[in-house]
Length: 147
Image (cartoon, rainbow, N blue to C red; front, top):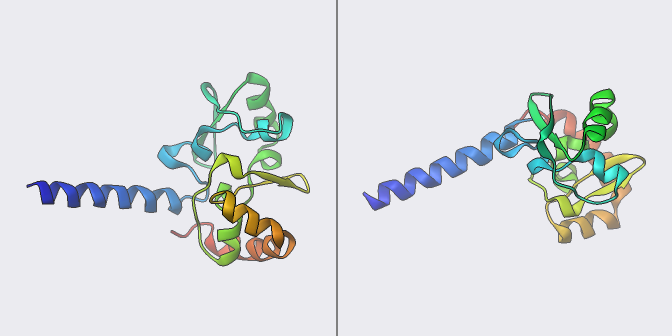
């Protein structure tokens, strides 16, 4: 019985990960970027958790914000604030796959928001950023709607 339960829990965990990566937006549990306010990266230059008090639905997922001003800014121009590659790892996208990200790996390049898998991957991405962005831009067209 314990073994069957462990297998079932592993399967559910695997399904959740695959399902999250099927979306064009990195949205674990249906919330974009683990609930971080994407406008805050531009306006406050740091990761700020959003609140369900200030939310909107865009591209099939919920986006949370830390203030009414931020949700209003996003609603007025979501493409301006939405992260590249749906918030998936920029380095991973350049390599041809989707990978989850962490808020502390953010970078803004040419007024576009990027994330990476972790700080070590961000360091590798930063060393060859321009070429990796070119590669990721090409790959994203094919990866966007795939698992």
